[in-house]
Image (tube, rainbow over all chains, first blue to last red):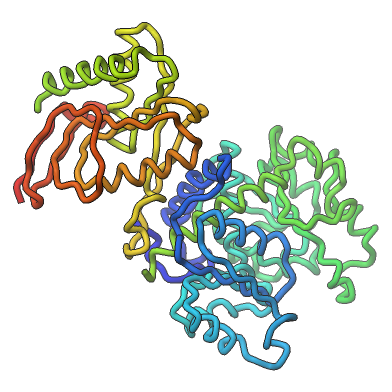
Amino acid sequence: MGLKRKDLLSLTNLSAADIALILDTADSFKEVSGREIKKVPALRGKTVVNLFFEPSTRTRTSFELAAKRLSADVINFSPSSSSVVKGETLLDTARNIEAMQADIIVLRHSSAGAAETLARGVKSSVINAGDGWHEHPTQALLDLYTIRSRGMGFAGLKVAIVGDVAHSRVARSNIFALTKLGAEVRVVGPPTMIPLHINQLGAQVYYNLDEGLRGVHVIMMLRLQLERQGRALFPTIREYARQYGLTSERVKLAEPGAIVMHPGPINRGVEIAPDVADSLSSVILDQVANGVAVRMGILYLMSGANA
Amino acid sequence: MDAGDIARAVTRIAHEILERNKGIQDLALVGIRTGGVHLAHRLVRRIHDIEGTQIPIGELDITLYRDDLSLRKDQPILRTTSVPFKISDLKVVLVDDVLFTGRTIRAAMDGLIDLGRPAEIQLAVLVDRGHRQLPIKANYIGKNIPTSRDEAIEVHLEENGEEDRVVILRA
């Protein structure tokens, strides 16, 4: 039994059973991460390449730790220090890496579909670590794992995803996965940040945060991408924070015991008030810790596919 | 082996463990998933009957330590290791149902040592069927059952909803 696939590119083509397998496998690695010696020999002799064309601290470190705790060899590759600045194409870069016998390539790229293109061109397994505005499957899987480890089931679970949904690969992957598992997903944000036809993915649209939060079990905040401020998606940061920032008063609108999630990095005082980010209902740091276990599970499951 | 044979073997092994270790001081049992876990629980109960004290028990999943992981197309399903006590300086008895090539036990010893430095590792098995590929030997054996390589040994246990028995399947 395994995932029976070479690559992990998207959550659209994973079944509910595949997702359950990944989460169960992550459970075993959670135990490993709690040991004094946080290392197992499962991926000895395998090479994992982190190919990150966009800046990332959390995801890259998380994959690196995950691979190292599985005893794989890890190479980090970033464009500023590589031949990419000399004009090499993505596929050529990857083929060179492949020629050095990389077993798994973890790709972060600013273009949607980059991971898919790469997967078609190389024999190594490809894991999508975020491609443009498309998907970020491992982030959604660690979000699911975090929800499940809080003892929540997915059937009938009410989840509000709040913020710049249109430009969020995290939101898209979560919508795909959560609706597949039977959760009820709401997207909340100003009209400029909610894509047209998102209801076709099975999400309900709310333009008012207070209404969107009423009765939900999970509040998933998205990072306000301040670097996109020039695009005039909202008038001012202060106005955005007033209308769509999560405050402790607003958390009270959700179900008692609701959890607050954020994929990081957080903008304190913009999309999330500092006291909410540090409150007991916040599971933001659990997400980071679980990310390593979930990625260990994914690397473990993928490493068998092309042995 | 039928249910009676298995019960008597478990009782005898419990006594042998106590005899060899001169009681239960610093003693712990760790079952190898899945069959070994059930047997370890039975041994702990039997030892409790004899000594009146519960000794620590853990469950070990050896999947990540297998020596054939990189050769397999499909990754085996992982189960969770749970050893909720410090094993350093304890005398740890590994428990498994069948001892065959010895590769599982090699993996289990590596797995155990990653959790700490036990004072001693001992091995208890219900059945020793021979055909070792590694220099490994059990300290406590329920029954030696000579087999040919192409036969299979199945240990059925009540804990899995079956009747207690050990059967040899001819190829």
